Image (cartoon, rainbow, N blue to C red; front, side):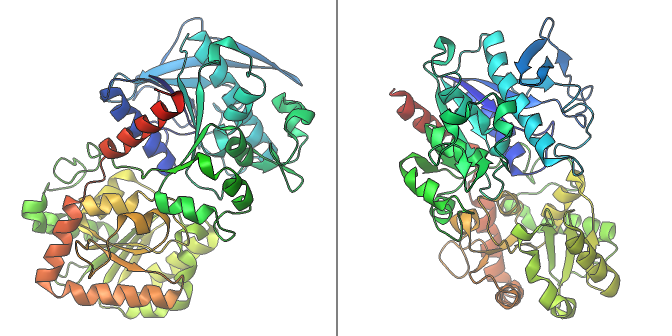
Length: 482
């Protein structure tokens, strides 16, 4: 099969969240399975073109007419590291090149929509220009949700794309891409074709995510449990009716982990490699990460890590009411992340007012890997979590997850004392439920025999992309009738 992925971010070139990891990992495995895969992504100003060997493709200038004039793209290319997968970077001097963030914070919302409308339109046209005739066009999240709409409306009679099936992945239903319907004019979509409840209209607003759900042939949701959650009033963020109407299209497939990147046996970013056979060598990384955060090493004191975007979804509302209790625990905490100002301020306060909690309001891949390796436990109290990658990485590093049982966290973690337990779970979205679960984990940490069992279960859990990729291929073939 020829498979075309379109995404706003692709690891390792550009990364904000788990979307980048999925689109940077899944194509690798699909290629190994014998499929021809191409990835299309914007050339963001933050991408290090020299580092990744990104080169311009000659004679690749593309001009697209739109309602207010024209926009122009050039095409550049590199290989996904360690593979023959072509990654095509769409270069635009107005919409992407000037910005040193994937999602610039201080730009107008309409302008953000224009950026991704232009990108999505250009990605379709570049597939034709490259003569890459896809069997599958796989779009991801609202930034590329225009593609299935375009394919079923503006390109429905185009012979080049006639056989292509449109897949759309929901990585996070909360981000839907909503704006006023005047944007349809810019997008070159006829109001009468798409402005209804079966199209893009959502309570008087244009909603790209809704459009992708309605127009796609198949919708991949990034964990089985999240499929059920988003069909509820509480979890659907306003799209529960649309999702239930399209329930026959929904398929939950867990994300995987790229163990060529996240593996304590081979990780070059940690001071000493280790495996399940000598997992206690984690202590070397523990000493190193504590030094980085300015905390003393205490052999029998558990270290709990948080690596996350500091946003409401990730459960940081739970910390405020129990700040003083966290300070009093016989454990150390290290936090790494950036996000909403009030969460950043809260963690700065904890950093400055406690002897056992340190926070770095930053993001650094090298430090995050050291935290995965050096911590004893990894805390993820998410309000909702479509799949989650951090808990899967922490399992591999023998860092026991403490999670709220929601979405992919509930799918992937077996809570102690269940058979095969590899972590700890709490259900109620409450600061006191979180604290009870942390205290329970700290108590079990003292039981060396049980703790070793949990760590070994965690490190031997298999969430490689091989399993998930096979399910993607099965879904692709089923949709193509093969």
